[in-house]
Image (cartoon, rainbow, N blue to C red; front, side):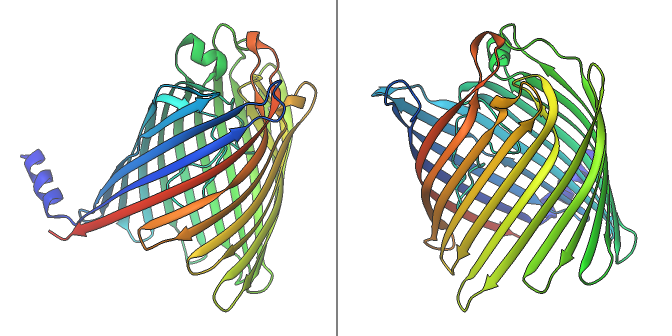
Length: 394
């Protein structure tokens, strides 16, 4: 009876759907290779999503597999498929309360060498300062679960709390030797306060436990890393078009011993409104603890980025530069740098075209558990995206 009643409620709820296809072709060169090497690959990202809203609930699901094929030196490689899916349940028992449950996962062959961050379409972007990954294709798995609660206690204060579990990395001994499996549990609390019309303050507290499980040829198994941190971020509007963000905090990480690491950030964003377009720029720098799965170590890392973008009614152009460097002994190969120049064109409300070039210096794992080295890679890309959506109130 209960199942039948639930089916009746879902059947009467508004249903919306979305389907799309993202297609991208890339050509790559490796300037620092012993011989001149060119490679190319094609990627297809179809996706389908459904959403239903029965009463105070919002239920949604997405399936977006990634299919890719690469050629190098005239040799074609097999088709690689990575299956990806997401489920989400959102409950609003009161206008000021939100409870959200998220579940995501992926399994298949993952191409970690993608350097392109398209401006149009459904691409995932590239490993940048947030996460550095080896440039290989390997059997891969990923699982992520998160439960979060948000409540607005007043017009000026919102409190949020979440707990999450994540697992990702290579599959099998060979896959873990290239990309160690990472298991992480995280608990986080956030308070957002509006101090005035120009000022806002966000304070977050986080506790996490990370375990890296390498393969037999990877780095030695490190003990679990347990950390606690706190960060306060002040946001100030310097006029209608300029925004400043400053943050400071710190934490402690325990592996073999206890290490205290500071954390800080500074970011300035400015927008110039034009008659039929907008010009925006952002510069930022951050210092934060980083869990390096390739080295099996935790250390402080400096990250910097700068972006300039012009966006018209249908055409956009963007330039982005980013760099990250580990601070400490034995992490010289952790340096990452990237430069992207891209352009996008909205052909219609459902069709988009983008293209550009990207150069990146990123780490490559060495055999036998040795320290990773760095490799320079240049990429030119052309992408096409299409989206269709609809719904019915039943």
